[in-house]
Length: 209
Image 1 (cartoon, rainbow, N blue to C red):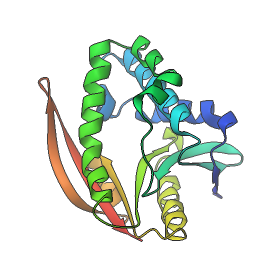
Image 2 (cartoon, rainbow, N blue to C red):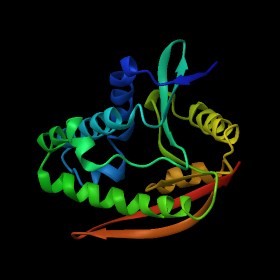
Image 3 (cartoon, rainbow, N blue to C red):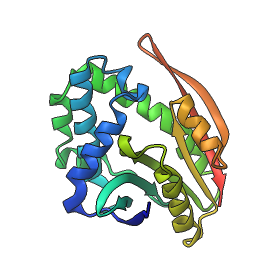
């Protein structure tokens, strides 16, 4: 299977969002806060769509393709990347996220997401050349076929060619954690996040380039 990589184009954004929604709809990272399956799918799609439309031109998005079809998507933030201020998200329709699910469920998810990402963001500030893999998703029917591995290799090479020394990311899944460990990542932070009676494990990992 031949996999090609390219920058994600705005005209391909809808396809990438739908792929990511399918990949995440059974991920505890979302399901613990959106227990209803229909609400969960709507929330995932809205969150990903609005977040990506806000930052698409500000950071690095890649599409993995097989025969012209997108089978994987990744967002890679350079060391100097700064998250846009809240008003920029509002300008890109973030308020629509709050129409996709119960407001409390959205707010609870946002709180968990920020807590999960904090160790990686803090670690980026500890040295030079640390790139953050914000997102890596693979079309469910293509999982287990090497797409995720190739995406990681591609991002590592991309960062290394631009002075990158390390790649960091987090996961809330023990299955995904095993995947990353098998590809050279090591855990630098492990915690259990508690919020409003819910709890979820979170592992931050790093890999030298």
